[in-house]
Image 1 (spheres, one colour):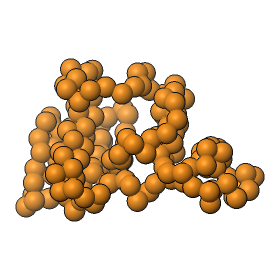
Image 2: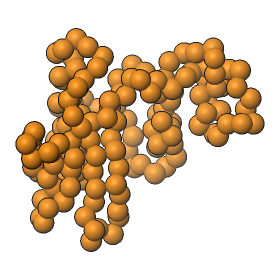
Image 3: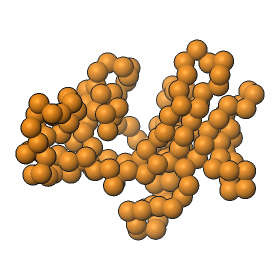
Image 4: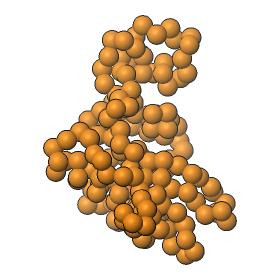
Length: 153
């Protein structure tokens, strides 16, 4: 929730009167923004879809988890803190043509697969396991486990 807010300016949640009663002095900036907007974070509306670890030789290291949420729960105006260069909504058909890191494309494709399964099942839940992407030599490789599925860039 914090990263989404900091990098995009969006709050992800649902309207709630409960958050307005929390004293502002006890909250960090993001929770203050949620309270001011009368929004409660919608943690239950997030799906854990992937995890990625950069190679040890990479100058920019991360070990991160990726969550997928329904855009109908994104509230606010796209802005962000300046960390991202180009923020905005785009049609899914344009993803392959956008300049981005391979791992970002892999995770986006995983998100689309995951969301398609959820929509086809007419459910808000999914039991699809999260993918694990890791660097193996010269390629990103991913999979939940060798026995379940393997994705390769």
